[in-house]
Image (tube, rainbow, N blue to C red; front, top):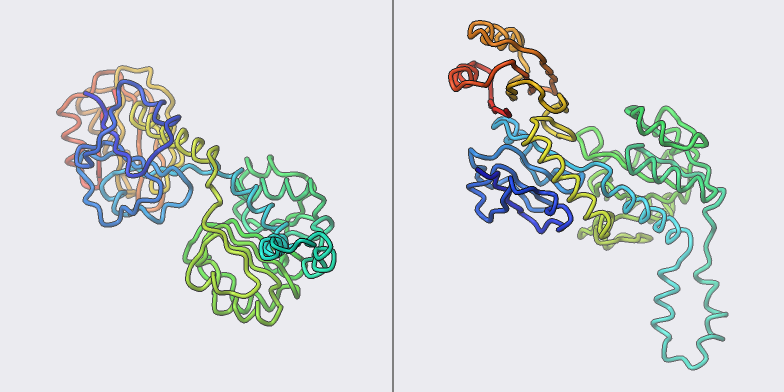
Length: 388
């Protein structure tokens, strides 16, 4: 029987082409074992009992009910890094737009297109659009994930002095970052020295409104702030005051809302960060790859509500994957059950994340309905799936 996949948004064809004959695209959500989604809001959807996984073709998952899915044993994936280059290029472009009044100059040309002597007029008018160069300026990057590291390396090659702050910097991203990037311990260190600040962190309780009056007061006069993460990272009332006073010289944000589109000295783009053909293709291919790896092998990569678990390809007679609560003695109870039924466990991988855990068991016999039902009956077990 084929695995039914529902697309809540249009997904790039290059991704869907990766689905084998084992999969079938369906318009009926009630039949789906997997969902592919981009921006569609899922919070009010009735999720079917058949649903095993949701893959978001993008990084942000605010449109998906993560806790609700976790409680049902539905693994939610995102695609970190797939759109990183597209966002990086827009950040670099935005720094240039903030440094030079390019948009003002373009608008002047449009407004004066009927002037037969426009070339001569432009020589007089252009001083109103003069700016500065970014070479030699100090750029502070808050958050050195996939996007932040690419921005750091590109800005470094453009001659900027680049500083970064990320207490959770991964080994992978550290290895990919230029050695010329200077790490600092706190965001405040960046505020005090940098001419440009760009933020690349997720929206959490700890980051919401992180750019407020206290933060602005610590920044250099005339600092340029770039926000391609989430508009709610910024206290917009405090920002308006900082823009009006000149404390913040320019604000570039990729999230239009009734406040940002009316702020002074602000450049607003309509959420264009990942709006490139390449980004959409990369996200689609990564999302489909995650779904296939989970469905076919039980492995989890890039989940946002369950731990990442990789047991490779099963080489034994059977494999069972169990989503369960992260509580004591679960593994002991699993192994005791298999021992009771004379089933040998050849390999076991278990990881936890907050209140939830995930275990893959490779066994030396076929999985039986009896074993599965006994596992499902255990207190704390959310979902049992026979992979092989």
